[in-house]
Length: 564
Image 1: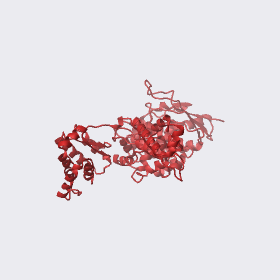
Image 2: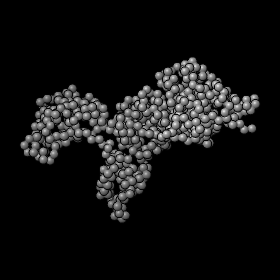
Image 3: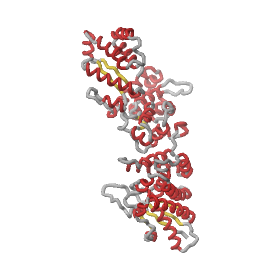
Image 4: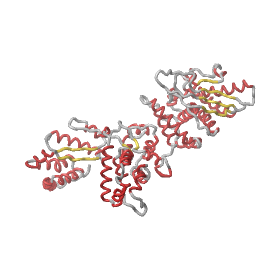
């Protein structure tokens, strides 16, 4: 808050010249008053409050009472990094008005309500107004109308156009332009300035030429890059921007911080510089952080346009990992929501990278080594493969080798997960991850080599679970009694205790597949073990009112086909 009292004193002398000699006298009497070692409280008393009180008498007091109190506007108080100074200012301010309730002075503070500010402003002596509940569109439309009218008076080209063709911009264009701002005054101002700027050798177009581009939100790449660079140097900038750009459902500031595992203030300081492009709620825990316009998302996700700000679709896999890890936080009331978002981002990753799926997964493993105390990466990758294998359909032109990779990688990561020395693995094996199914059909060529790879890793997984979590093996295993292995088709819900999917269920389904393949070859009496077609069928089922938890005839079914 260095220089804050001096700034207010300067503004006070402009509004009330009679205070100038009083402020000068205070500085002469106390030459060190503006030193940083002097408290803000003392500076405000000597340079602002006392001079104001001294001149408020006689005719000036009567005039002020008649016209209304003098208002000091303080904008962006939350952007002041000196939190202790802000707290001192507010505390002293409230004490001053407590002692002088009838003084014709008001302080108008425009600010995000951060915790250190909120704690002091939640006071009966303060009148709070939440602007989040106010729609700014009418104000923005008025601003644009006045701005374009003023531009027409100053620009001969615009005036000549209006004289020949009439109103510009026409009402439908003005309405669309207002809507395109997304409620951002800063974006409205920027669009207006870029539309009416004078022609140059580099850009000889007229405002009338530029308006259609503004309506389509084209030509704003320079604006986006110029704004984003303001926070580019800050820690976690790319993670925060990528998260906001790709989230399937927006989050408040505290939600973004929790998801990324960083401090709330680290999110806030990145966003404050970007308020022309991104809606930043007034409080950390209420209201979602959103992009004002989809064109910013298009910019960020198009590498040729965004350059160093590019947000790759592979970041969906990172978001899936974050949501998956947070599934196992104790007392998390959003577990079901996080599970669905884990799945949503895993599928978005597949949709974007089904052609280079294997390469992307291998890169992800290199960049995210397993860490103790955090749910192992192996458990996440196993769950991703299970999700894609049993719950969703790969694109029809997906390489068969990718499907084989998914099922073998699923089994490999299962074994690595349960062998990993971390207590979090037990939670993963027992914790519901997904609670409903949707998809169509996947077909995988199941060869003898695939069978042997799966069998080897399943033995490793079973041994580790038997040693560390034997109680989980008390659940019925499909292959143990042999009754289900005789079935041509097995409804997956027979594997589940509830209409939910856990880590242990992956083991049970894969065990049945391996035993069923062996049984199929024995039944066919073909010793060479020819390739089988592993077919995973799906029916679309959505949870709803009255839907039973166990639906044995509607959900994923697994079967093997043999074609001579």
